[in-house]
Picture 1 (cartoon, rainbow, N blue to C red):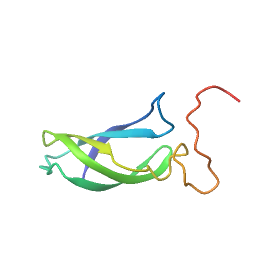
Picture 2 (picture 1 turned 45 degrees about the horizontal axis):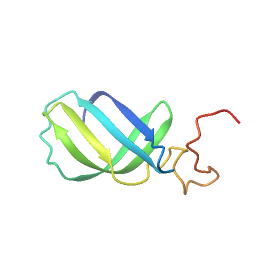
Picture 3 (picture 1 turned 120 degrees about the vertical axis):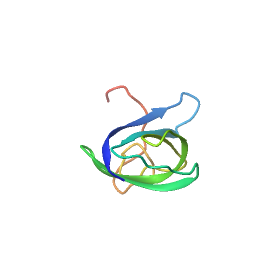
Length: 92
């Protein structure tokens, strides 16, 4: 989908080591999407990120996707080769 940009938000909760993520995306043309699961593949300054998400809100230009699994390529998610899961924001 043609894009004018977006914001990826990754959050840690105090009660768990799991991370939550959400993508707020702005399309340059009107795209009427269904509120259903999508496999997202994103490229940004941090590199390639990918993961399953559900579209929770859209007006045709602004789209909000909520992650429903691991965000591949993000170092805080367990299971990435060579990158341990960590949500501790304090320096070592």
